Length: 147
Picture 1 (spheres, rainbow, N blue to C red):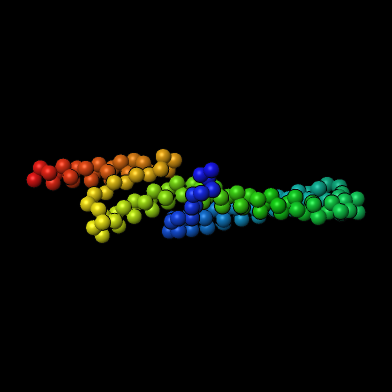
Picture 2 (picture 1 turned 90 degrees about the horizontal axis):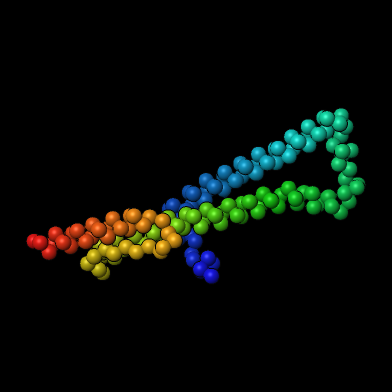
């Protein structure tokens, strides 16, 4: 399965800031969710004009009390893990081609090759950039042949 063989963290210059932005966004979203749960519990307590412990009697919950806390915290952690994976996967679709493009340019500048031929995976983005760079290389070869 190619999904797990791919190296996802390949271009830190692009992926680190993107991951930090997503992490901050998910953290803020989690805080909003926790605030919503807290405000809902306060509203419920005000509606029945009694302490929240009467509305949700923890003695009745017994061993399920820890499960109640986990049912709030676990989805937030799961959202964070899924969010980081999605960011790594989608940013890799941009970072991988840019990494290969940079490697090809470095090979050309160091003299290892006399032309730039950029090829990206079919599932990657930025194919039009590769086509344009390849056409520039072909155009420069044609001009050299004419002179």
